[in-house]
Image (cartoon, rainbow, N blue to C red; front, side, top):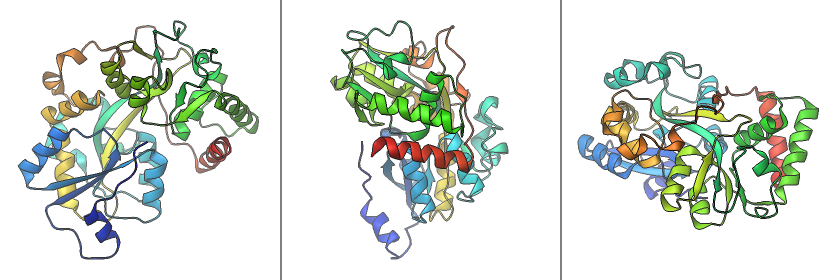
Length: 341
């Protein structure tokens, strides 16, 4: 898990010192998610210095924003977290749909349930949450979540789960055949029992899955498809599995937190990432689809047939879940807290 390292300039501003210079942009995002060459291109194009800090979960990012900690110009929330941010007034209305490069956004992602009309956000990347096996050591032929939740002796102690409350609980609910956004006490007890039993076989709860898989520390891991592909680049025996019980689809979005100190620079960044050649850099680097028409002309040809970006014909349709109600969120947090204590 990457530590969140705040730049000296950001810490100075948070401490109540003078505002940022006009030529800065402070981004708060996942680790290994922002292409260095895209940052360099933006800095050269707009004469703006980009600073990047990282979080390890949506919960970490959301908690920081809710606490009133400011200083960021750009965040990259998942589609379900977007619903919460909009509802609680934590985003600037930037009217991305009125920006020059919005014409490149694929129709699928223009008017989305988490941000109707794209008032607050633009697409960054989209993908899925499945799991990865080392096929040299693990038999995943049945494509079942049983591999994670009822592991063979050979994989016990070598399993990694994402450090993400919603992804983990949703995966457990699917395995148990229960609905998502679930506040049924009996169902959530079953989830906690399943996860508690599994915990004895889990090496770690870590969202930085690539290193664990590539090094062999984990031979089975929950993973986002892009991280899975990057891990396979280093270890060809790794295989991304689309669980037969179902899996989560998601879209991460580029948005601007309320009170961003460099609002105009933030808008420049939002427009910049919707240009096809720039969106392609995101795909080439992070290995996720980008939602921008015309980007395919700039995407590495080797990605076109990658299994991590192309589910097999018999795979279930990905499930794009809305944010659960506050009541469900509290229940999930209780399950997660009990599991990790």
